[in-house]
Length: 524
Image (cartoon, rainbow, N blue to C red; front, top):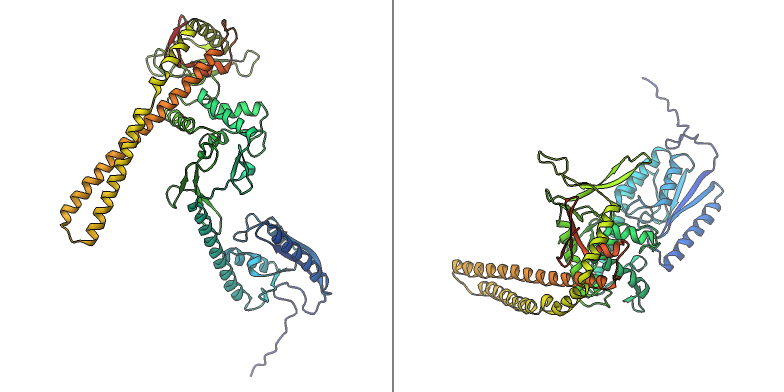
C-alpha cells in the first residue's frame, strides 16, 4: 500500500511571503464622511486621528497613511480621490493591509465594493472592516462582504428616496432654493429667500437689453468678456450657454419653475432634464423680479423666432445675418481673402454666389464700406427724426395695446376651465350611474374636441399678446436710440446699428437698401 507524505505549506497563499517570516505589515486606513456639514467634519477628523493612533499602536504593523475623502458620497468610486489614490498605492505594492470603519464607509455600491476587494486580493492586499469584523482573506469574508455591501447599498437607496421625497415635498410647498454662489442677480436673504443684488441685477438687465437690441447670446458673451465683467461663477470668460441660461431663467421675472432636472440613478447620481417624467411646480410671484414679466416673455418669443429662422443662423459679428442678397434672397456671409499674408482682408458676399446655374451678381462688401453706407443711410433717415418720434408717441398706445387680446384670453381661459369641469363631471357620473356607453363616448369626445380647440385658440391669443409686447419693446428701444442721435451722425457704432437696422438688401453697387426697424426703407 502506497504511503502518503504531507508536505506542509511554507508560503502564505495570498501574499506569497514565508509563513514563519517575521515581517511587519504595511497598513493604511480609509476614512470618509458623506457631507461637508460641521458635525460630519468633526467625525472625519476623529476617524483620521483614531486610525493613526490605532495602527501606530501595533508592533506588527507599519503605518503607511490615512487616506480620506471629505463630503463625498459612497455610492460610486469615480469622484473619490482619496479612495482611488489608496487603491492605486495598494496595487503598486505600497500597502499590505487596509483598515476601515465599516463596509458602508468603504462603498455603498455592491459591485464597486466586490470588484475593488477582488483586485486587491489578487495583489495580496487584505482589507479589514472593523465594525463587522470582516477580514477579506478569511474563507467566509467575501460572502459576508457581499451581504453587508448589499445592505449598505439598500440603505443608500432608502436614504436617496427619502431625500428625494423631502425635496419634492419642499417643491410642492413652494419653497425655492438656488445655488446663490453661481446665480447672478440675487443674494440669500435671512430666511433663505431671494433678495435682489442691485449691482448684479444691472448686469442681468443689460444682458436682456442687448438681446432685445438684436445681439445674439454669442455677441453678448463676447462683449461682457471684453469688458472684464465676471461670470456668475466668478470666471473671466463668458460663454453663449451662460448668457442663454440667464435669458431663459424665469426666476428673473419673479417666478420659479421647480424640478427642472432629476436624479435618474442613486448610485451614479446621474441627472437628467425633466421632460415630464416627474412632476414640476411653477410658482408665480415668488420673489422680487429683476426683469418685467412682459419683457421676459418678449425675450422668449424673440429667442424662439431667431432659432426657427434657420436661413439666418450666424451671429458672429454685428453684420452676420443682417445683409441680404437682392438677387436670390440669400444672406451674405463673411469670407477671408489672403488669410496668411499681409494682404488679409475680410469681405462679405452672398452665400449662394457660386451655387447653381443662376449665379448671383451682387457685389462684395467689406466692413468699411458697410459702415460708410450705414452712416449715410442714418443721416438721410434722421432728416425726419422728429416726425418719426412724434408719430410713434401718438400711435404707441393704440398700435401696441393688448387690452382686447387680454379680454379674449381671459374668456378662453374661463371656457377651458368650464369644459374641464364638464369632462370631469361626465367621468364621475359614468363611474356612478350606468349609462349608454356609446352616448357617453360621443358626449365626452365632443367636449374633448372643443377643449382642444379652445386650448389652441388660447395659445394663439397668448402668443399674439407676447408678440405685441415684444414689438413694443423693440420700437421703444428704436425710438430711444433715435432720440440720442446727433444732428449729423458721423461715426459708425454697434449700438446704433443694432437698434435701428432690421436688415440691408444689396441689389447692385448703386442700389443698397437699408430697412429700419420701423419698416422704413432708405436707398443709398
